[in-house]
Image 1: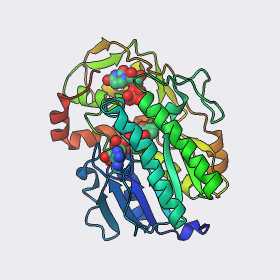
Image 2: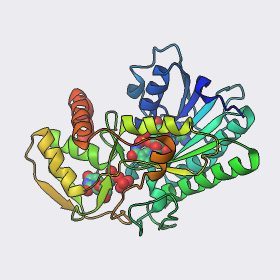
Image 3: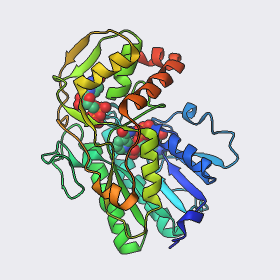
Image 4: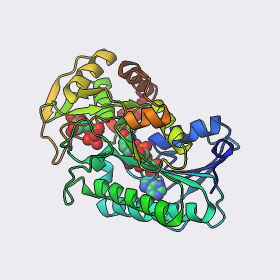
Length: 332
Ligand code: NAD
Ligand code: UDP
């Protein structure tokens, strides 16, 4: 097993053409790593990698991670971010989502076992379901519906955590599990139905902001650069840190407050439209990040206000995305 992690120079990023994955590829290339981005472009976009495609250290492999990977891949670090992440995308084909979570994770774990690479799983706060404990600590087992509309994602990610843990115990693979809470920033897809992208696109196109339920449900939003920093720190942490680690911003706000903030920061005055709350939509979510603070010396540093302004600026600079996708903005 390779322990000299600071010299690790070859990374595979599964899902590297997606929102988080493209930022991670960028960060690793900046650090001087060689990066292999493996993506089937299901929800990822080549535009996300536009600034990077000419980089001599980046290789892009169009491939479904649930299928066998080429034998000759030699990397030190494997980041598994490949999975549709927003409800509208992961619910479009629930069986495919499960296959990606379970068979995809298995393929990458086998690669790690073969090559001695460390491997990090992008898990999710969804493993806590609609939590009965608040804020959520890693020791909380969660409150998840096994047969609801979110189950393909929640249970797929829970199963992937089990697979990672067992490959760690039985095959000696160095595994890392990041439980990522809601993350936002430039390169979010305008049409993926997430609250931040929906509200910004709606505000910029003068449409009503769609509030699901009464807007009193909470989330805690982490800016993408902070999150990527947490992922890299977790990957580079001592080998014995194999248990799940929450990565997210502990500043919790209601959906209604987020809507007001987006209106203020975009300087728009659009009405709010109350819509039905989707089934099994968690009522509150906020990470306890004590473990990440203690073991990774990590905590988010970007203020919500600052991160939202950067995200709004991104959408303003991509007006064709906004106009094209405005029609597709999901009101579930
Ligand atoms: P995204 O949809 O933008 O990126 C996912 C990427 O994975 C896309 O490029 C997609 O094409 C690719 N992909 C999907 N299925 C694949 C497959 N079978 N084979 C190869 N590539 C495949 O989503 P994101 O927001 O960047 O999320 C990245 C990861 O982080 C996901 O695993 C997600 O579950 C996790 N996560 C994200 C958040 C968040 O707030 N964004 C929160 C918790 C967890
Ligand atoms: N939401 C909303 N309006 C929207 C999109 C989402 O009120 O246009 C709500 C959604 O019901 C949820 C919260 O915002 O309570 C976060 O939704 P998102 O899909 O961004 O993330 P997740 O539910 O996966 O945490």
